[in-house]
Image (cartoon, rainbow, N blue to C red; front, side, top):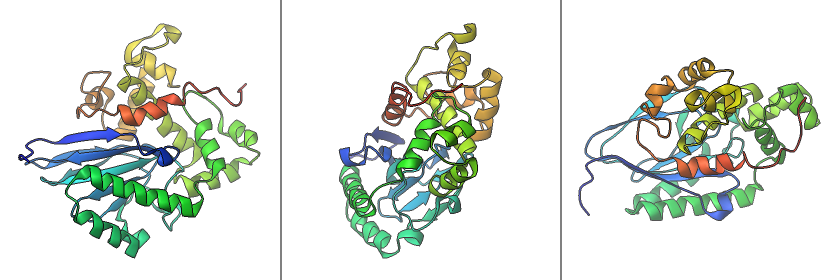
Length: 284
């Protein structure tokens, strides 16, 4: 196998048994030069498994986190849907904006998994091992809370709704909804709604979607309106808050890609599929 000289990143759909909880899995390989990685809020958690290193968890993010991935790193990762994290032994609101060793949460289980992965030099095989382990964990735990899943569905950007209205629809008080969301997602319903709205914009951009033309705007401004922003200035403020960059800097001047050049279609495909699903309730 030749020497890798540049960073590569490949997203893939998860195995069938994880598709209700995992948004995407991926393999990242860093070449001869350290790679600067910008992590963005998605509403969910991520598990990172560097081959030969220690697995770690990236908790729910409220803003950007920039790290330097060392040259020569090969990493397999798993990105979960909001509210669908695997059993972690901690509430999600305790893990917000934290990067920590998975050993702190899984103990010897994480160590055994790291030992197995250390003996694997093929990232595809490593990804298979990780996903098989997660399938077993979810089978034992019974899966995520369906009410939290309904909350996430209700906060998608294609379904604009007031938080009070969502709580009423779910037969909860607003304070009960907030507590459930903080424990299972790590974010308040309002924070999650803002994150999902921005993710919706990125999903449409990656899919090269055409703006609906509402309010007579198209391009970036049109996509912003389509996911619930009042205008492009509103999008720009939220983009800076969530990513530390302007939309132009994040997308590299092109609406249909991010400046890093990664293809995120495997991640945003399932996200966009929720746009086509029939709304389960109406707003006034």
